[in-house]
Length: 186
Image 1 (cartoon, rainbow, N blue to C red):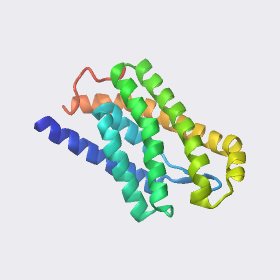
Image 2: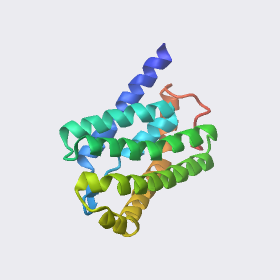
Image 3: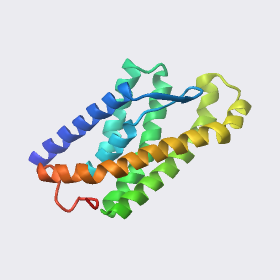
């Protein structure tokens, strides 16, 4: 029970940090697309706490974002959860399977590629309904706008997670909140 309480507490703290980051770190990039680094912390939570943490933290942060700072409503919330989970779940699964810097890098690269592909499809399907753009106009934006944005987002989130994960794992081991073998090359 003690470990479960620690895990729940750590996931709640991860959600709080991710929400704070989305509140202060949102940067407009192109059109209506904004970058925020919350996925770094959600992926970190999934890598260190397990894939279930990705689902819980992503849903919590996206719902909080929807009711407080977002103008995008439920569709934006669903898009946030889908994008975050497409990035962080593969990263968490692969990094936890091979707990090394190489495993971490491969997980983050896979997560970035999957997220980029999923969001291209999702944008093609939903953006015409969501933003009221004709599907042909959205299709014309997929490669010159949506793909570079998602690759930029995946790259920044992957690099941030790769840099933060080993020292965070080391600090959590020292605090007794993580087992020693889960070091990710730190």
